[in-house]
Length: 525
Image (tube, rainbow, N blue to C red):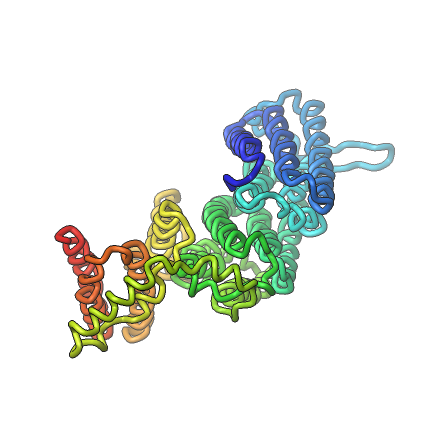
């Protein structure tokens, strides 16, 4: 992004936008909330309108701004009601008065409207437009015209979440309004089913992620309808982190293909940027809510609250099932078309990323290794040398994303359980319905067979360690002396795989041993 002519404008707009969102988070006064809401709307317009020379961008910015105004209209209506009825804007005083207004009605001629229902309906609609729910979703895919950092900030992790946060902030109100909860649950359910189906048919990579966001926010809105705000907040955090990292990777992919966002002209990235392949697979795995990831646990808590037996809940359950079926499909369409699909981009795109600077030296080193260890040549993993100069992401991004990936795969469940079991008097999820958490190991595979658990453990640790080894080799292969030690490391890795086949616990010990030895060999060299 630093090649952009107006990089300063982008940076100060991003900072102002982030400040507005943080301000919204800390406000406990309705007037200040409305002020922050207006700031968010203004800065999102300016960010979407960043490349204002394009006609399509101007149209997208106008659409975003119009929907933002409609949202603000509902917000202003609820603010006016608040002033008239409650005579205050302090949220604590408003929440104190709410129970006493349970039977308060507003009369328009012969018509009477339940005040709390009307007030909460205005608030919810304002939040739903901002969160791009069904009927109001059309602005979000077009808002992808913004630069990728702005897309990551606005349309994945903050702006669309602000609507859900508004509902959570006024959660006391929804205890007294049954119809608004029905409205929220149905709106969220329709959105999550619609968003996941629509995402499958997108060719533009940014629009696919936008519809994915619409679908995932549907989960949160639906959860708010069932009054399970703790679970919603947890999944909100998981999803926001996940989407932000996914957008960083999508930004790298778009940059790799010279600004092209059409997935029909992408493919074959894994040969040229293996780091993106590894990290994108991890982010999509988590976002699809596949087992043993934090996304799975977050969805599970929400689902636990949503599974009721009345008619409305059955409709909601049907929508959730549709979404559960289609979410992994569109996520792995993204992974396999862009990363492992046939190379359909322009030839020069690939050629410019393949670095031949050290090619001759590298061939000499490989030949030297093969000659030196003729008897053990089978143990040389040629695939390691295949991905040597394929680094696209910066060092900080690699460390951040990789630590995020490990955290969400290996410690996501433990983190959620700590939060839940310490924030409630009794166990949050009763043992009969879900895994037993009281004496759980990291993956809670107590009840599955030993073979199954060992196999799953093997694959998870195998893929993680493989990807880490690839990342290490990409970092250090330019060093001639390090390559001499690669052979020993390959042997260690082979032993590690054999140990995994025999015993999971020995394998776990061995992975730490191999990394320690690698560290020592690097130090000696």
